[in-house]
Image (cartoon, rainbow over the protein chains, first blue to last red):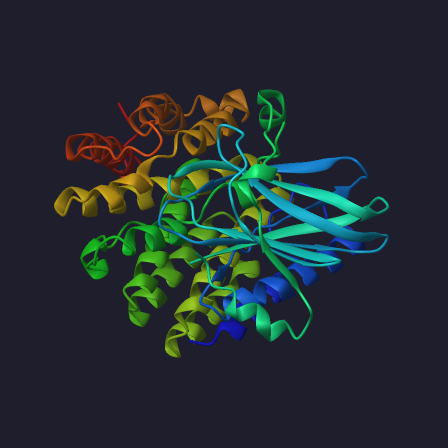
Length: 144
Length: 270
């Protein structure tokens, strides 16, 4: 098993994933950062999804993304951002809107949250801008 | 608890903590309704479903293979649905760690892709799949299969075939669910059965089907899929935390079996 190959395959597909619109240069850079962070989890056996969500974070606002997860799996959600965003955070909610307990990682422009759902179904991942000004971000996730 | 050992490799000074329940926020119904949902990230891959199942019981993945299937369909909607199903088959072959089967399925994916006019973009993917299969790079193959699926969908969008994208997704989900429900019925346990609870996912695919053009929606196969998904959404709407019984799993299996038979059939559904 060579996890770095998995990361490499994810990075080389940066331009091929299905998106509703073309990612901006800033979003591509943010995705590269997110994939680098996710690569650390690949070393621990996590598979990185090729799908991603890129967008713009604004002060005092958040982006909320709906995902469908399986009980039994473990997940890490990784977000990369670019200047002028200085710090972002990830929060996970269950289908009732209740926040779930996660392991969190934060390194200024990158952040991650990990958890293992006990129930299969829909979850929501919120990305908040904690410090800085409006800027681009990208979310990827990994599972095992 | 998820291990954080890998983070040490970042050679950075991370802040690692646990988000405590007492600091918890709560989303409103309005916020949840407005959440972003996209095919590329909101829909799990068959590989995710199989990974969850594999944690609960030992699966004989090679016993889940299908016999050879036609790759000469003329209806584009049917080709898209079968393409999704084949990609799910690819994930099964990866779970079985069967390089030859991965290569065979990769070849069939190329044939169906060619029928949809996306073969040029897929050619390099096919070569990569073969190479990774030769070298037993199973994790990489998982990523490559998903990248192949996304390449097909991306090509569909650029060829004004974006309406077919949801059919590829749907075909993959149906085939994945057929395999998983079949395995659970054969060797029932509650933990395994819990993976089947996905009402929001089925609702999402149904909503996407409702957005496609009336012409495509009226095609017999698409119409049949759409009609039966309503029933399947109810079948996978178990209460959170409760495992469905073996009989409930069997009903889901029968429902997706019927869909899969229609997808594979050369005859239009009645």
